[in-house]
Image 1 (spheres, one colour):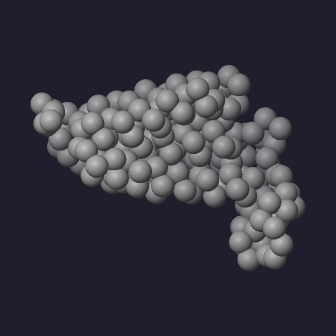
Image 2 (tube, rainbow, N blue to C red; image 1 turned 30 degrees about the vertical axis):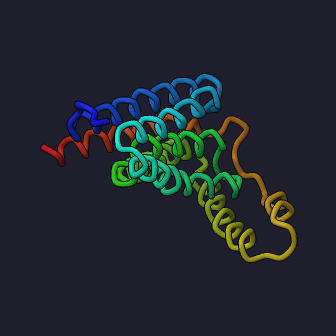
Image 3 (spheres, one colour; image 1 turned 60 degrees about the vertical axis):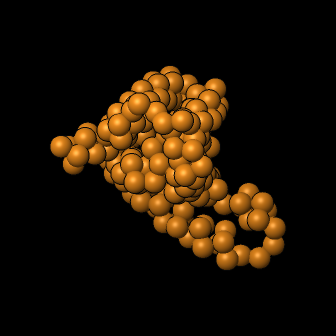
Length: 190
């Protein structure tokens, strides 16, 4: 079945869903400091279904590739105890909706926005040196986690947790980066 939507219409729907969902994630993350599964689960499933409905098996493949490429860096951060699982699941869900090319644009936007948000929090809390030290610990932990011996779960548990009790509401960075990427992609298409 051929959908009566142009490529431009399909991308407009994808970006609209991504922006609205990331805005919802930011609001919830600011309130409760987590991005709940009730948002990320249906969003991920919806992206996979949408892609399959629009473009069949190739669309589903594009969506799954988006999940992997966009979500993997955040999954890694979660494994290193430097990010939340909700952040990783949110990025995977956005990858399901955006696919590879748009997903990479969102990933870059979110990474840049995340750096700015983290720096802003460090400056506001006067913790720039400890934040830099935490980044060094995280990088060294990655080497230990992937190159060490023994069970993976034991190595992961031995990584020091360096997030503050409040944490950074990374949903804000996800929202800002996704919105910036949407604008960038819209301007690039024009």
